[in-house]
Length: 156
Image (cartoon, rainbow, N blue to C red; front, side):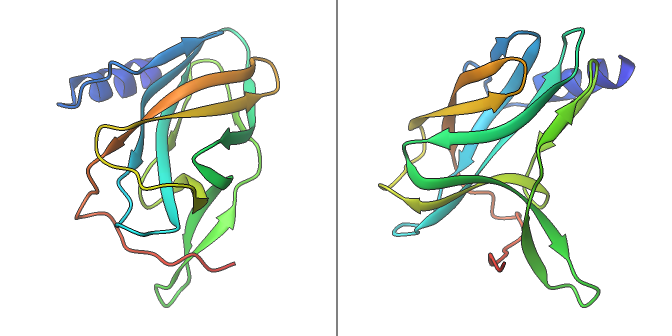
């Protein structure tokens, strides 16, 4: 529980506003956002921290959104020579008191075949699908692209 409290305290102390946080069935979705894609890009990435403040574990089994033809949970892996590749992430179980982070350079929600341009400040509807909580509607805000985020190419 200390780990959860520390993680939430750090996130809430960050300068970004978290007006679009959502809490459903003990699951707290902290600052769900999409990094602004480059103009004309066909793919993008979404991020969120999920804190399980409930009393039972739950498993994220899928993600849906209308802003892309496909949304998949991926993680970035680096080979011994430093080349990054994307690997599909299996369902993610979050125990009570634990936190799971979809963040740049690690786990993320890959958005493939974007349907339209996204600009800073836009809100995009997502549905996160859990074994216990079911279908949870969460709006992701488009944030400015992080110039310090690692540049990676998606290779399967």
